[in-house]
Structures are given as C-alpha cells and as structure tokens.
Amino acid sequence: MAAPLQIHRRSHPQEPTSFALNEATPPEKQFQLPLTPPTTDERFSHGSDRSAVDSALQIFRRHQDHTLINPPTPVLLKPTQYERVLRKLEQDPVLLNHVDNNVRFDYDPISMLLSVRMPTPVHDFFTAFVTEKISKQLDVIKQRGDSSTEFAARIANGGCARIFLKENPDRDSQGARVRREPDAQFQHQDAEYPGVVLEISYSQDGKDLEKLAWDYIQYSNGDIKVVIGIDIKYGNTKEATLSVWRPRYVHEDGEEIDILEAEETIISQQFRAADGTFVNSTNILCLSLDDFATDEISTKFDFGNSREVNILYKELAQSLNKAEDMQKSREPTQGSRGQSVKSQRVTRKRKRSSTPFDQLRSEDEAEHLNHEAKVEERINAADRDFSSGTLFEDGDQRPRRSTRPKRGEP
Image (cartoon, rainbow, N blue to C red; front, side, top):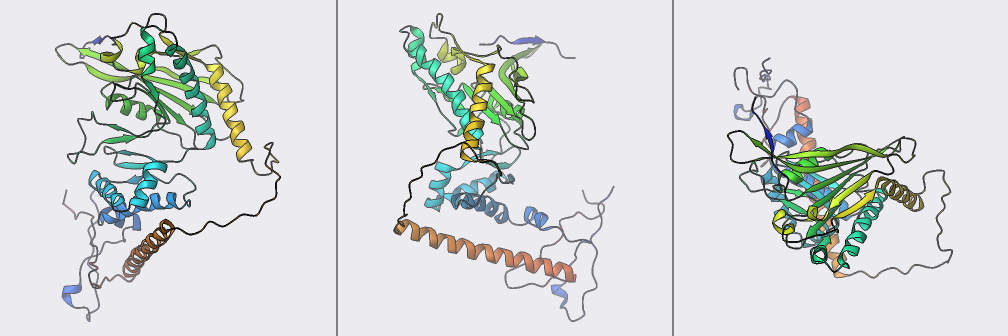
C-alpha cells in the first residue's frame, strides 16, 4: 500500500407581465405569461419528469431499432428520474434485454447525466489489442508454478462490464450509484472492484479522462489502483498520448484519517506524434501484479520475480496503427477503393419468417409512436398559445406558468 504523504495546513430577473386578454375570456382562465416564452427545452426541464424519462427511453429505443447513428447528447436526469427509467425498462422485457446486452451507458448522480457510449471500430480494435497484450503476460505468469501463479489465475479480463461505484459519501438520498462501463478492466476474483481500468478517448469532443479516473479511484475508495487513459486525437492529427492515474494517500497534521487523492503518475506522454511517427518508443507502461487487487488480497502472496506486466509505447503505437487499418478495411473512406477483400459468390437471400417476438416488437413500436405523436401535439399546441399571448385550458392539459422569479424573490 502506498505510504501516506505528509503535508502541513497553510441584476434582478425580469418581472412577468400581465397581458390584456380578450374580455370574452373568463377571468378564471386568465393568468400571467413571461415577456418571452421559455424554449421547448426549458419547458421540458421545468415541466413534469416525464419528458426527461421519455428522452432517455427514446435513445434506448433508437439504439434497439438501429436508427441511432452517432452518440447522442447526454440526458440530464435527476436520480429519481433515473430510477423511473430503470422501472420503465423493467416493464418492457424486450427493451430491457437489449439495453442490458447491447447498450453501453454511464450514469453519474452527481452531474445527473446519462451518457450512451458508441465506440468506433478503431476504438474497439485498439482496446482489444491492448488487453490482449496484458492477458498474454498474465497467462505466462500463470504457468510459472510459484506463488504468483495462484494469484494471476484468479485475474479475469472483464471487458466493458458495468461497474457500480458505491463508495460515494455525497450520493443522493435516493441511493443512486455512479455507473460506469469502461473500455476494459481486469479484476481479481476475490475483489469487489477491478484493480486496473482502461479508458480510451477517440472522438471529436473526447472523454474527460481525468474526471473518469477521479471517479474510479475516489468512488471505489482506492480499490481501483490503476486507471489507464489513452487519448487518440481526432481530426487532422495522428497524435496519441498515454496517462495513468493511481491512488495517493495524504496525511494531514492533526487528522486521524488519510485523504484519498487521484494522482496522475504519467501525464499525457506521446507514443505517436501528430505526423504519425512513433515517439518515446522505449518507454514502458508498467503494471505490478499487486495493481490487480486490493492490498488485503495481494499481500498474502509472494510474487518473487513475477511482479510486472509491461507494454512498450512502441507496441501501443503499432496496435493503434493496426486498429486504424482494420477500420479502413471495414469502412473505406469516401473516394477510396479500399484494400479489403469480399466474397465474389452470387447468392439469393431467403427472407426470415416472422416470429411472435417480431409481432410483439411491432405492437410496442406502434404504441410508442402513438405516445410520441401525442407529446408532439401538446408541445405544438403550447407553442401556438405562446405566440398568441393567451393560453386556455384544454381538458386535463394545464397551462404552464413562468418559472422565472419575480423581482425581490430569491
């Protein structure tokens, strides 16, 4: 366990305006409107919880129907709304099965964001190549016949399996937990959390790797001992960098309990330059065997000389180039002939017969589309009412009042 580090202490909002409504309008139907109507997004965020819950469910349904092409904007969900999403999924076994087995998503009750991950082939192939190098070295250690053999034999590659980070003292009273689905992870069979986590950023916006590392370390109470972050730059550059975070325990004078921090021990070191050349080729990403489990587990073993799993930066660059070649084979860029080879065999395709499962999907989709149409109709009606300066009650649809505070209100 890392030794604790010793340190010493050292304008007012606008008022709503009453519109002069037509005298034919009954007084009980009149109310105040703001100077400018709130946008549709504002009405959603301040209206009922249904809109946010429906937005999340719609993303899952679009993923199920293969109409979700690009990663969607994260959905703002309060912990109570997130719990409603989970309950709604339980009421739809078909959609629940798809989400559980095919959708990668994170939820953070602190930022209240639900984010769906949609990695590219480059991202997934590169992840596979890196984890393969780690797994192969663990396999060699398993064959050595010493104390490290038993320890290594109980380490498994957990892929992108979900992790519930429960060691969060600030979590909402509703009990919502931080949920993460990393790109890769290695976990000892006797540990509650993986010891090593891999996150790869490969998108236009990029992941906040530092925040992810902080969450993993803090909300696992340091049981996640290594977070590897690889940032593959997007656009007209081929730069790629490596960062590593580990727990650090700081002891302050007069305090009995150490402070847990996430320390970046490797800070954005290049392994491929902007022009694609390999750099820092002889540098090594080094993992100790005891990184793969908590101290309570690893200290029971004598690892002898079998203490390290190493990956050269050159190997990272080679793996990234190979992953990019794999994507080019699958998805040639526009105007490119590509180098991949396909079968030239000419065939006819037999149609698959319909099943009860397909019929159930069709019924569910029809019901969902009907619900969406009703929601859209209500939104359009509200927009028309705002443009005329008057809102009338229509059945159970109550007019939405301005949520802006009056002058003098907090």
